[in-house]
Length: 126
Image 1 (cartoon, rainbow, N blue to C red):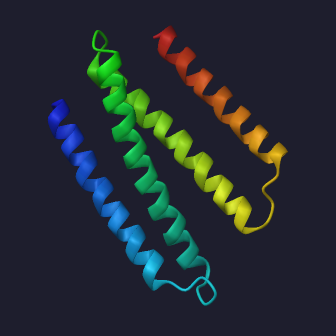
Image 2: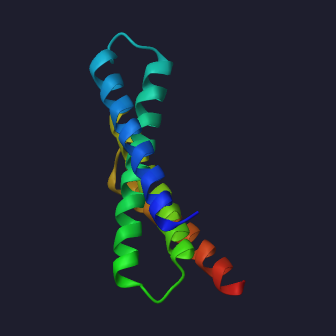
């Protein structure tokens, strides 16, 4: 798969995810919905954020790291987009339950930083 095809596919999927999130946002009433509505809301938002951050991260990495492998840069951008999207969704869920405190934020950021360091050390050992 070439880089142009990869970016095209991610772009189309991200646009579709943002459209689905918008449809869910406008058609689901949070006061009347059950668990399924919230799962659809957070899942579509997660996928939308992940696609957007992946595209942005890939393009930034391609601009500044031209001497490295393109596929490796795209994989790293995708993985970091997953972490950042999880971070945002986790904060939104905690905020909806009025449980978002500074120590929750710090612990989750620390957890994701350790997880990213683990994946970076796996890459260096290979």
